[in-house]
Image (cartoon, rainbow, N blue to C red; front, side, top):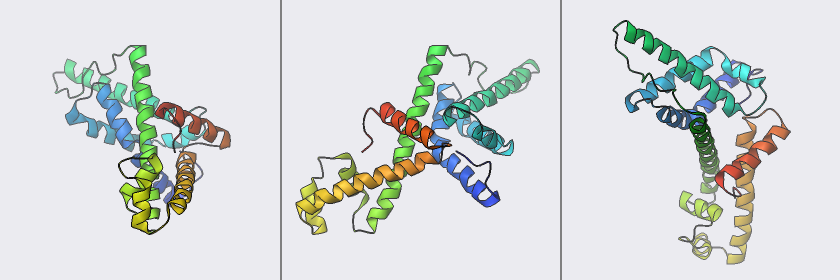
Length: 218
C-alpha cells in the first residue's frame, strides 16, 4: 500500500482501501492473539486510527519486504502497548479489558498466525477482485453466481446452461470464459499492485498468493 507521495484526497482513498482490505484479517488475527470477541473491533478500530494518525503508512512505503509483515508488526506493537496499559491498571486496581497473556505465544504459533493472516489477505483480495468483475459482467446480463461459476469452474452451474440463458453458443461461451478469467487475473493484479512498490514485488506477491491459496487463481 503506497501513499507517501499522494495528495490529501487520494491519500484518504488509499487509507479507506487499506481499511477495506485488512479489516477482516486484522480482526481475526486479534482473536487468535486472545483478544475477547467483545473487544476485537474496538482494538482494531484503535489500531487503524493510530496507524493512520501516526503516518505509519508512509513509513511502511520505505520498508523492504511484504507490507503485511509490517502491518502485523505494527499491530503486535499496538497490542503490546495495550497490554502494558492493562497491566498498569491491574496493579492500580482498575478494570482490565485486554487479556494480559494476549501476546504470550510461542514462535511456531506466531508463524501459524502469520500464515493465517496471509491466507485471509489472499481471500480478501480474491473476493474484492471478484466483486469488481461481477460489477462489470452484470452490465453484460450475467449475475454474480454465473460469473463465479465460470471463473471457478462450478459444476453446479454448467457452462451450457449459462450459454443458453445468455442466448449464445457453447463455443462462444468457451471464448467468454477465457476472456473472463483473463480479465479476473488483470483485476487481481491491479488490486495487488496497489499494495507493492514495483513490478518485482508484484510478481512475488502474485506467486505467493497462488501458493497460499493452493493453486492458480483462475
